Length: 117
Image (tube, rainbow, N blue to C red; front, top):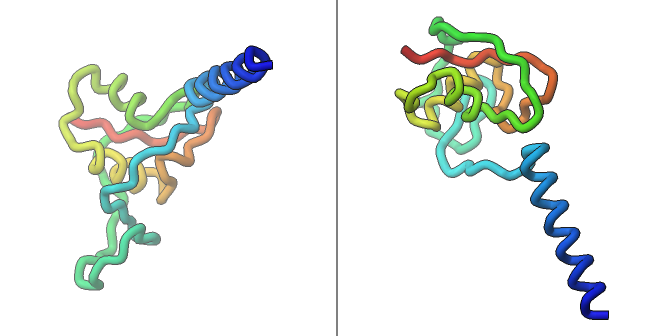
């Protein structure tokens, strides 16, 4: 009986790991302040709120494939260490894509990704 239970637990753990790696459901850290024109994740004093324009920086359209994340796509595009912090990268992505959060990207859809010089 113990071996059956152990086999069942191992199967569930292995499936969970496989699902997380292929679908990309692992949660991201939200320790940093992330905000945009329409939504404030963390309350800020009103003097810091300002109207933000969509950046005029260059960008590229990429179609999302299974297992892609915003950070992994940008690392492939840069082929070098990213010149900005991850927090700034996520803010720029949100600005370019009209407030879409990086963790809400969907397979098969195209999104704008900033290109850093």
